[in-house]
Length: 592
Image 1: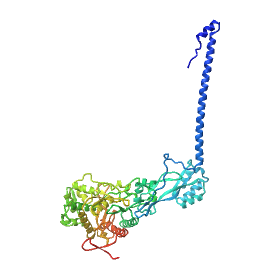
Image 2: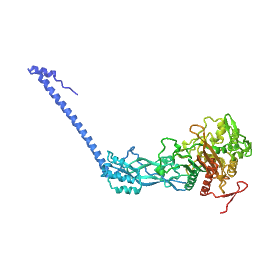
Image 3: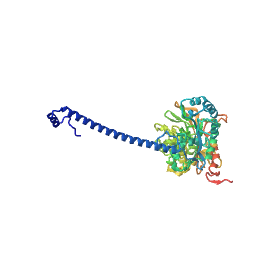
Image 4: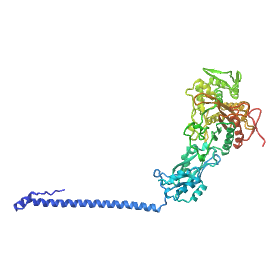
């Protein structure tokens, strides 16, 4: 910018020479400068106004196009969610191994209210309370006459309820489409299925999410559209599950037990054919979890998977199997059973006096604590722990339920020699009935470890744990436990049941054990000559009052319940009854 001097020297000299006032020149130059500055400011302002006008035009153009687009599109409910995250309502079915529906979807409606649009809030509140007894008329009226503009009334209603609400005829009551989860078999397999609920919701759709069981474990898979609606196929057999639940519930009532659990497993693959925990619940109306007290008192608690218990004499089978496998004993080896067996301040006793000696076979058949402790002394604590680890007793089972990781066995803080001895007959180590079923499948199926699974076709045999010869010897002993030992009430003609009873005193929360409360367990394999299935039945505080004396041992409680389950379930599993010969496991087909 070239500045014009206010008093140019040449002009001033000329003006003085002519006798003019030089200040006039300065005023003239100042006026020219101000005029030029006004022109520049006007140009800048006009440019800015032009730019602002273009911006406003562009903004109004965008808004107008968007409004036209919205006016031409179908109305939709805004979502309170992350932009671009749509609500996926569709969920795949769940079936049993034979394709029977365990969980499916049902089209229904949700009921909501827009109080500002209501004509008669008092009448609406009164009639809704009559249709839905769980709603309070006073609370509804308070909500309808308050400041709320939107109110959920019921998340899902039946067609009959929808018609009755429609008959109220108030414009403030609205219906939204829903896809709810339906469990058509009610309580059947409730702990396996778990249940579901609503996640994100809008008035036109809702997201169904798993709350527990396989519904939660496979939540992502069940909601994945890439699966094309293919159902999740479980290893459960619906008819067998119904039979097991019915018999177990009957046994629980007859024996006045606080709870019960049963696991029926394919001995060759580890597939769970039936899994029951009582008391149970209806997944269509899943109850709320307990907020205080013992979680195991809730019907939501899965005793078969989450519950870890001292399983008593059922562990003696593993002690004998390890001793046979390592060549420490044979079935005929004589073991000292004279008691009590004293170890420091501890005394180990038998339920009956079995005399000074028993064979290894009879130690298992008669269930001698002293004999089992004597056998494990020859094995040693370190090798015992390693063997139980290979049977799966040192970790959670890995079953495809969200509850399974919480069923991790409780181990002694130090695996001392006295711990080794008590663990040999089922005290001092707590595990779930599912652990027990998998371990018995391993020792009975020829010695191959199995991993429990709830999915059809996913069962696999793992590493060899014991030899076929040891497995055959154990099967023979387990058959004798039922034919002449502590579990004769579990015998089912035609199915050669083998098994082992276990009666464990229940521990007190404050330490020590109850004198009159037990956990009775019976684990069976059938047919014992070529095991196809393993069944574990566990009863919490059972008591047989049919005789002159009250009996709590597993031979009088869990064993007969298991026998009835086998009698009912074996034909459903496709097993034909066979006639046992006097020579052992040679069989002939029974006449039709």
